[in-house]
Image (cartoon, rainbow, N blue to C red):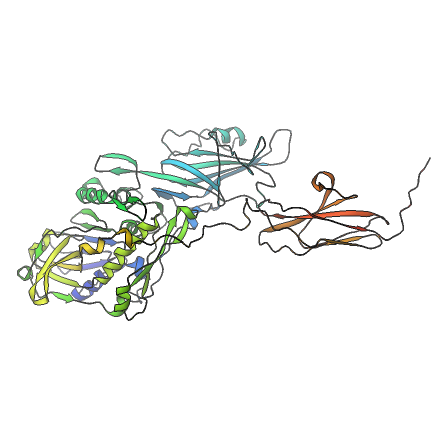
Length: 610
């Protein structure tokens, strides 16, 4: 029976040479079916490959200037207003928003007909979560008390509360939000429990200062899904990268694998490696954590590749078992020699120049920058730049599930060092190849090729019709994964994300206030205010000078430009004017003024009738 190769995405060619080329990407993803004893399935996904080198089939796989991967960070913190959206899974802890599933407005009280209260319900995750922590309105964290009521200006002014947020974790026993049941005119009932969904209900009371820019974008920092740990056989929240990947592989929304299809020893070993403490510039951190959002509208291949970036991982499916290897050196499990070969091996000692990189840069999700995608310090090696003729050859590796710049640098270092280990081998082995699987580390002794115990990782495993196994091997080594804290660069020079003229920054004061009069009018002007978030300029008027215009004068106009004419005024009338800027957040500048003028027309005659 001839061999059949059915590519799913990256494609695995049918010849030995083209199979070798595909495996050299580090991201071969296909189903390989053999004709011996039914079917043999071999399947592998790497964190590298298309994440670094792009997915365009017509471009070289190792491109010096590759396409950047989508960091998938900005959109996940935005509220979504559309009737149908894909579910989201939160692993670890991150900031997230989601679809608006309910909106209702009502008066403050039965005696009012103004719809000043707005209720919104936002689903954050399609599962039970560990906790909902900080709540954000736009880019500002909102301080809440134990009842969910805001405690600080502008969402609490005096005794008036203008924002309340009620949190629901999606437990099986979750009851309907009672505030909504009591205040939605029957639209939200006791049956609206939303079990299995993590959501927040925000009750917003309109106030010009609190909501000057309209309905804010509401998001939350969520400690997400509880995951199974085969080491303890318990299910609890964890940001351990291996356990989060295991959860996706086993979950019904993921690959749906059973425990019998899991090589638990490999996942336990990977989880232990992820939990190891490693040095940072000034402390320690776990070797690998997973903190991010899975959008179930994405392809499983893309989800796995993104998740594997957080641990420099390599996931395989061979012999009916899922196995995981994370970014740490494993000693060779065996040594293969010429006597183990069915045919001459195919040896590539060097990659072509266009397939080499000497610099890796990209973005990670930074909690210190409002949980937004932020560039981590680029990783480069002067020795590699010198080898490449002093020319930078950069690749992009974005890390959507990584929230530490030092962890991001370590992962990028591994990717760079793997790229510079250039030896690649296709080894047509005899039956000894059945003792290893994709992801295993083996040593190669082949004196004629100058190979003496060269450690290699099996990146592709293919059974042949003549009872052999073709092994695709990439050079490996302990030095690829070794690092010192001195290799890390400080995370300096990246400014925090601050919205211009935000709620703590008043707008610019108007300048050069002037007033000039005619017979029955007064023209008031000032220099334009150039703030990008300016909403309008208030004009205040009084018949006398005042040190406190807000108490004694009257606000007569809200002006978008920088000039206004007060018409139809009596003659011989003296008026005083003040102006101040107001931005879209409701912040107000200082008063400027007064400027005064007197109309020049005849004094109005007042008739007194007796």
